Amino acid sequence: MVALGLLLASHSASLAVLQASAAPSLEIMGQELDLNPVNAIKSMPSQMGSALRKFQTGMGGIRRNWQEADAINKRVKRGGAPASYQEVTLLRKKSEDNMKLLQAGFVYLAAPELATAVLYFSPKMLPSTFEGEEGRLNRWRQLSRLRSTAVVQLLWALDDEAVRKGRRGLRGAERVERARQLLLARSPLRAARVVEDYTRPVSSSQQVAKKPLDGIPKPLLVAACRMIGIKFAPLPSMRRQALHKHLQNLIDEDAALARTDWASLSHSELMDACLDRGLGGLGDSDKELRELLRGWRELTDEARFVSEAVPPDAARLRLAALAVCAVGSCRREKAKLPSVLYSP
Image 1 (cartoon, helix red, strand yellow):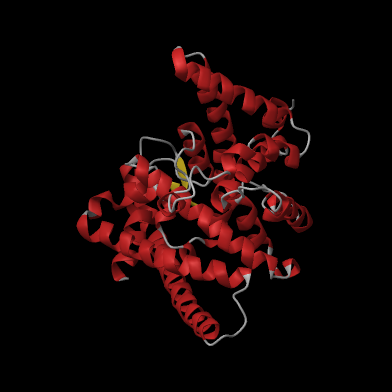
Image 2 (cartoon, rainbow, N blue to C red):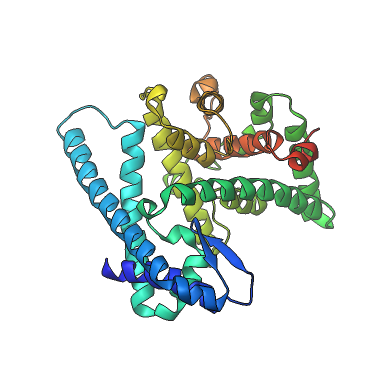
């Protein structure tokens, strides 16, 4: 824990000095850093004090989350009320924050000279309780940009594949046609039907059930990972595992949302829920965000397939819904150029 505090302090103080030639200032983790070496040295005491205060606040939040998570687990084990959406997300964040806390401390102890660079290129390495209001807005803004980028890059990848020769080109042409139908669909449900074939499990075996993303085209996997903030993975299997974990979280959270009064959700909780599903953007009201979540619930309602012999896989169904929602969100972008680009 002390190592994480020193990591934050050294990060705030040293980044401005090390990158003085890059730009006059740099915004990172919600904090404006002066890259002029003289000004940076003068501001070191205040920046280190601010970082230590953030450390104290973040550690206090982690301790509160531990206590609340223990109380929730004890209640559920005793047969009490099932966890609400807010409680399910708290349990998930508590687990993730524990790992992030260990990672941040390990980086500082093992390679303190790399701490600043690691935090710059991977700001999500810090636990959620260290984020702050400005950091949260920056994360939402970044996820919105990544979503638009992922959609465009996926379309480029499909077009490139379609002009290849042989079997790969034929397969690419088929995917391009499927993408064209999705883009031209006038309603989310019609768009979802275009990709429903991908929601079926490739096999009914138990081994395949543990790996529901097997057989999903690589361009779609890469785009989906980028949408949820995973821009780089050292190994292809790590990308697949991270996306699978995200989709499984959505399954659990969707079940919790079904038993939660949405009026009790704060704006921050609504934004996080929507962005995790390829929905929403900065400037959307709570009413608009709730309406978007209702659309997601309709897309992922497995009751639509009750009469079919082979029901969809829950994770694949949400991956298809994620693709449909991402296209719709790009069309709703507040920025002018993306909305024009995606107008059919």
